[in-house]
Picture 1 (tube, rainbow, N blue to C red):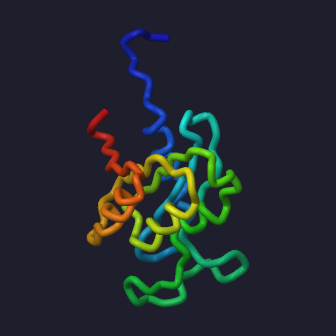
Picture 2: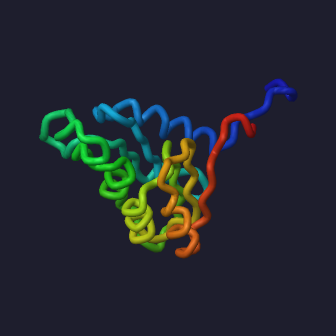
Length: 144
């Protein structure tokens, strides 16, 4: 391997994965993706993207902003995660989680860190995650 070539970090790998899985979303307004991993980055426990429930039409229920009816990507990833509560986890999400998803992340158990890429206009989830002792940070590809 070329000694001058910089390897990308695992944080970047999983944030890119979240951005790619978000492309599966059928939401008209915002495509969001989530990846839940082990803290040593060796395992992916679950992925999720926002959209309608399995078996329902692959479309939003409504065109009303903030009320499209899609399950959030974090919800879907948490539903798909079968790692025990005590297992330490990192979460990578394309957008800052909403307040309700922050609470779901807390209840998942074992979450040590949440990294998000895009900021969101409502930032109340930052306080909630911090209060629960979960590290949260914004990942920027420009920082690498």
